[in-house]
Image (tube, rainbow, N blue to C red; front, side, top):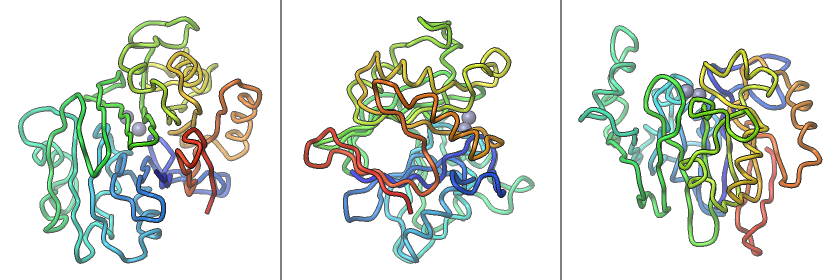
Length: 290
Ligand SMILES: [Zn+2]
Ligand SMILES: [Zn+2]
């Protein structure tokens, strides 16, 4: 399984000189086989533009799992050029709510908020609800479970193939369920089930731990929580994700330094990060930037 981190910011894109190393696109992670094209996308933030560069004119054929419908996870959809290239197929799955997935998306994607409606994105686009539970999507096993966030139903995902697995909790507010053993959020059942024994836990780290008292009501968590969840669930590696839009490269380096000695490896997500999961020894994670 090969991952391409196309967008790693939360809330809003973050261009600028202070953000060139980690990048400024919002959430999108592309999953595909080694040597093959990605077919499963986690979220459709502005990072989809980077996937366009990667696909270089080839059509996208696959599914997009939207963990929730906040702008930073959907705003790349109408500008996804590979999603309208000849031969495209794009199935968009949203957390189950109401009875018409396209109508739910159209609340944000239709005039006067946006020039077109979802069905005008391309002839090969379709939209459907995803329920909690186990699914087979694009050849991957996907476990979808609701996790606490703020303002709308939010799913975390666990994605597995025959040899490897990852968990994706991009926007997560575990303090909503209690303070937990460290006072920074409950290690609740759904988070533990998603992260159980995964090779890689991709997790919300929008706040610094010292910011939690003031900012937690906005619905996110910190790197220390991600590490504690990994320890409790047996995850092998942590990838801190959904960086605050104003967190500079230097500040993100400083955050990485806080976890340099941790028992479980902790890496920072950045736009363009490529990770190969489950190579040879089944537990290895190898990386390359581009
Ligand atoms: Zn977000
Ligand atoms: Zn959100």
